[in-house]
Amino acid sequence: MRGVCLQKSLFIRGLLLMLLVAGCTPAPVEPIRLGTNVWAGYEPLYLARSLGWLDEPKIKLVEFMSTTPVLRAMRDHTLEAAAMTLDEALILYQDDPDIRIVLVMDESTGADVLLARPGITNLHELKGKRVAAETTALGAYMISRALDRGQLQLSDITLISLPANEHAAAFKHGKVDAVITFEPVKSELLREGAELIFDSSNIPGEIVDVLVVHDDALAKHRERLVQLLGIWFQATRYLVENPDDAAKRIQPRVKLSVSEVLAQYVGLKLPDVDENLTVLGGGEDAKLLGSAHRMADLMMVRQLIRNHPQASLMDASLLRSLEAR
Image 1 (spheres, helix red, strand yellow):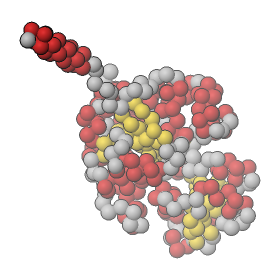
Image 2 (tube, one colour; image 1 turned 180 degrees about the horizontal axis):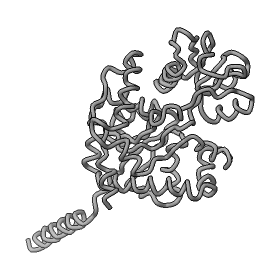
Image 3 (tube, one colour; image 1 turned 30 degrees about the vertical axis):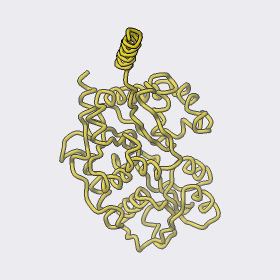
């Protein structure tokens, strides 16, 4: 009997010890899963990881081959955050109005271009010509803004939908007269004698990439997200101040030469904290909201989205917290 009691006592003590140990074991860290596709404007995230600045157990970078699976993962909530273009954010917003844009990662200030064959020197001369662009809201937006500047209608040109990897060949073989494109095709065609007749520097602040976060993740991981933004700006400064070393770190990931990596940032602005606050702050008067409404007008005509975004889509609270430190 006493043996049985002793066994029970030992069992209870062992159980209590197990519970005590379990109680002392820290809960596994829930990472912020941040999705991106391959794009120069997102590389400061991976540069920060290369430099050892990113707290990887807490922030996990998830890379995709294109933007479509990024949007799908955000819809499925298998990502807490993602980098994407403004038009992609507007598409995601239709299904998930609780997303928030918390950072402008990059602004195209000449990276997106309209190139024409020699002899076509201005936008008005596109009348009656074949113009190629990707079948994306961004491609459509660039076409629309270029036509506005040239006082042309869409009916004045023949619009040809082409994926980016076919732009150079179509232009060189005379299948199109002009093309909306970007690096590395931009440099390739300029070397071939193409005329630059319009680019994103003509529409400042309108072509941007943004960091989108789910509202529940924003509430749950606020402090960590503020730290992430701090690391982001640290990495963008490093890229500006140490371009050669940064390019060498980026090079193996993107499979480009150092000079080609640096060329990716020509015409691509990486806004700092103050510039971000200028475009994201201001509620109904936020500059980025104005750009989003202009893009939404075009996207609604093309039936890509149903509604205009509300001011709540823009959230500068993380930036303000970072600035206050």
